Each structure stands twice: as C-alpha cells, then as structure tokens.
Image 1 (tube, rainbow, N blue to C red):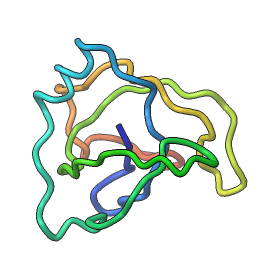
Image 2: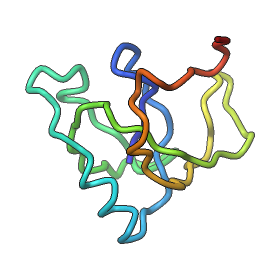
Image 3: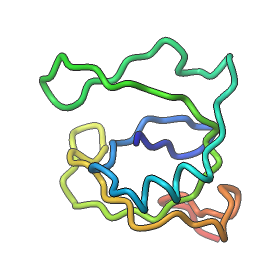
Length: 105
C-alpha cells in the first residue's frame, strides 16, 4: 500500500509492510477506485530502493484514514526511509478531520 498525505497534496509517502489478511480485508472494504484522470495514472513504482522490479498498482480515491507506525529514519527530502506499519483503518475519521504534521489548531 502506498500512502498519500491528502487528495490536495497527493505527495507519495512510503509503502507499508506486507498486510496480513484481516488488515487487507479491512482496508479493501473502504477503498474506492480512483478516477480515470487520477494524477498518478501511468506512474510506476519500484518494490524498493535499487530494485527494477515494479509494483502492480491499483489507483484509488485518497479518502481512507489509517493509523500507521513509523520509525524515525528519514531521507534528505524528509520522507520516511523504511516501510510503515498499518495499525488500523480509522473508519471513524475522514481526511478533512486529520491535522497534518506541523499544523496547529
């Protein structure tokens, strides 16, 4: 699973570790196919650093909130270097309710 910050930003964040069956089912129940004019149409993603192997990608609407666990290792661009771990899908929240990093309310 690749992650984005929001539909407005659509900045690619890291991928998750392999999801177990309950996590795949919970996430799959919430995802909706992306539009045919999705900004990432035609993009390809590798399976990891230095790999030429490509991921099979299904573009979806960026409207699902999930709790993830990350380590502190970041690259020079400020992105996480290692896969994140999905903790749970947050069906009780919408993307509009999420405070982005660095925002104060």
